[in-house]
Image 1: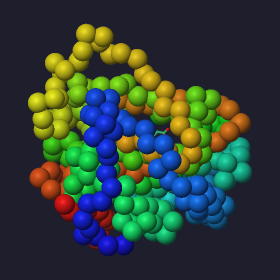
Image 2: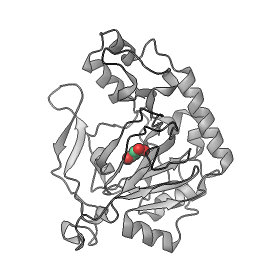
Image 3: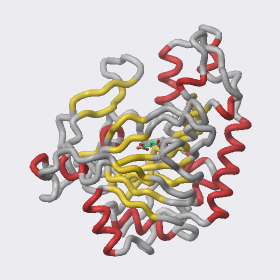
Image 4: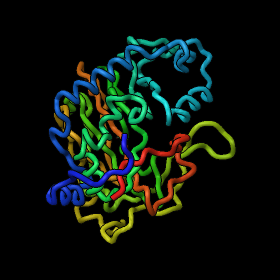
Length: 312
Ligand SMILES: O=C(O)CCC(=O)C(=O)O
């Protein structure tokens, strides 16, 4: 993959205006069906082939899992392809209740480098529009990171509570933009995303999700003492309109759609108790110039540094 590329593609002025107003943007048919098929085939291959024998959740089922093992497995996943279970995949005594391929909530977090079909999405030759979209949303010199497939399995797919992505991938000032691709139809029944439109303008990033302090293992939330909004006069707590918090809007989309998500936007997804899974692929980009990536973020750069997407 080339790392220094000119900008191509990008959002239309009307798409950009929608993104700036709402804090998210749905782009239908962003991926051709052949790409969706290739990414789904890769996902199923990964799910079918990973080993349970050395997985920390396997130890959990035999009562040997310590939090430390699970924490390490998560915290060292930034340059690997690892598998994280749905919480409801286990019985109270720790037995796996589903076949492993139907028990995984998430695969992460370095698919965009280690899995050829997912890495191809970042290749300017095969996906110029993506690079342009990253730029048009204000992210030049972007660094994609934290890529993952979220399976939201039938019957046991976990809910994702309301959050802002800059809580998890903090830069000073905040700059994260989420790229969220539906690889299967996402509906109200199987736990599509929903969004609080406009909240990116008034909702501060008050909390950060970081590596635990003082040599303790694991992660914790801490108060954000740095900037809570990106730079710009359009942002601030006084930008909340008279309708108060407003209401969450469902983002039902077809397979192949891309949703761009501003790092300050409040969004969530509900449980999937339906018989249909909801496989998606997501990664985030951060502004690589003029921002500082925080050393306490849970996700730290791999030895080779974060992948550099574009430089205008
Ligand atoms: O796909 C989901 O259900 C949640 C994903 C999400 O909120 C995120 O990636 O920020």
